[in-house]
Image (cartoon, rainbow, N blue to C red; front, side, top):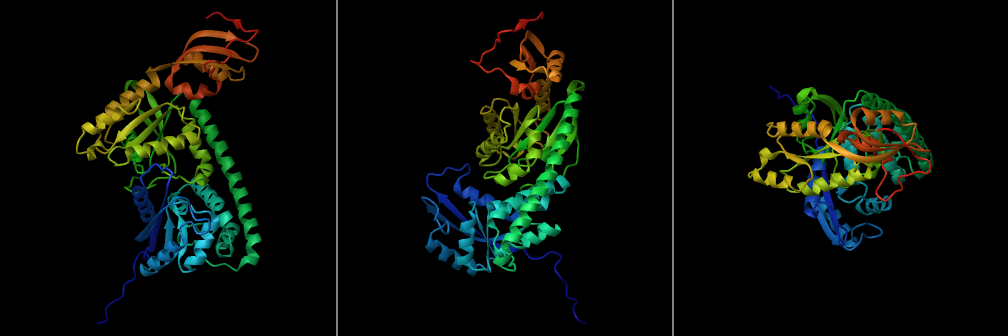
Length: 454
């Protein structure tokens, strides 16, 4: 009897060779070796099999090939020996570097960088229409300056919308040639303009939803943190939900909002957002503007830190830098030191709490410390009042009413341009008043200010 042949259910993973360049004098948040380990995890998440790596220390990148000419020959030999199909740089390559490396290495091995891998992971994990639009925009803007004869499959996707643009499975296909290049660029620019129009509609829609939520007076809490820090697990625990959770980078991409019951009959809306990472591509930050605005408009941020990770503090700094980049550094923050169940010494978590202004140590998996977190949330959102001095334009009647309804007004002065209000407000409202705060040293009094009865 002839034995029945079986076919694999999934295609074999592409073989990837990693390259890391340590530039002297250029500081990065993660140690050089750990950054390469993170790149290896990114490649695994993208569906690649890492088969080797090459490193080099340099004062500055080679103007032509990024790494030295001798290293290029060594890389070519090592990649050939390992039967690599893809070479992935931990550094972001300029379009010129990428083209020159492709010429030197040969057409059988594609050249990618960390940014291309992250974009591919996002493309795999985006489930909603909004997420897919944002990823596509980031991909097209990344690949446009890299468009040459060998990238023209992007133009066909731009015209027909088929396939996943920029995925590692498709990057590097040979096109019809340079004569088609300008037509391809026009097609991609047209697609970028179309995607931006669609995302502006999404942004407007999100803005209207935020206005409705603010009118409901239910505070909004946004979970932020380094990728794989445990944000989704925490939201599941708080909201008794079933959001998808996996022990991998960028397991969840599309934002999810759930209502959480706090003690004393209080409530809050919690939103899980995409995880951050060091060297987060600027194209992604720009494309995800509509989603990231949820962070800057929140009443409170829960910064989830994987305290069991050896680079926990570096990862926390990477998140802080991203918050500054998206203008969210002034939103009140509670730092949640997660995964204490993985620590051999629980005292280490308690010591780490002292490094943050407002922090709590928990395990989202076991539930340890969750009651402490809920108590801190209630206190911050509903019981802690923050001193504030603001000058509100008269057009901001809703905020004036909000101050009167929820705050403690100590001084009220009407003037030509608006009303000067001083007092104390719940911490969750601070971010809404931030644009109109009177900063120390600024002139408080206008010539025609008229004191009103308190």
